[in-house]
Length: 319
Image (cartoon, rainbow, N blue to C red; front, top):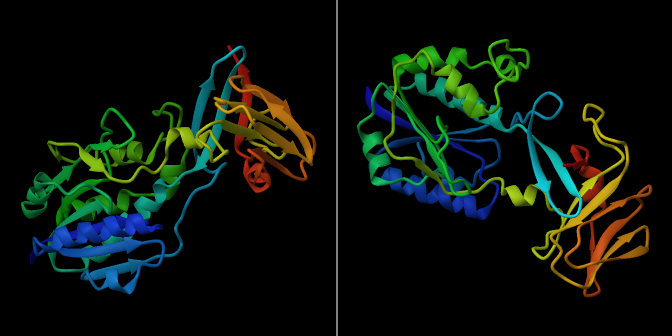
């Protein structure tokens, strides 16, 4: 049997991400390592030809609220304090789906070890050493570019031998991952995909890669989650009148404008203008929206679609 199959989990939906993927495949090939690439979106043939195996699964099983979601919140302080909340889809199961697809194909092939890596990890000398000298079970911690502390355990790098992979794969279960009534978990569910992964590997004997794995792509900039202006000189956030019925709110459409650093900002709602004061946070109740946007120096930006799509967001007063 061959020693190690590198299984790359990917979702390269931009040129930047594809270039990172290509660079990492080239680094792996300098070590004569065989590669299985997985993607939920089409991959250019030129990249497919760089690897031994390729799986394209267009299902991309994202889990949306209320089945499961990732809740984020932010406090805005000023003369009045506000709590902003938004819920993003849960992308964690898409990674587990790729682990199942890649792992099952891998077990049908002639390899002793299987190394699961994300396409965007920084492949350092220590990572190369781990791939060239695979152990029975190695997991890792990740150092995201946008965070101060590493997260553990992570999907960035996990190496399993054939025996451990055969035991692990049947444990990965979507209904269990989505369950929200687990009596031994607070608050009754797995908080994240990494939390579920930690649960899955609890009863295995494993070691941890000594250095944190660096994630080269920042997926969710916390500031961008709460700013729909697309402008770094002010921020805005919506609560619309069609908020999902599972999310508690006061039923009032509103917009909060904050961190305003420019003097010439105008909010336009159904062709009516409101001048926004520099340096002041403003919460404005909204009528039924036909059109909403803003102007900066007479340049108009339309926000109507973003407003209509903001069904998982709330704005509340807080202490």
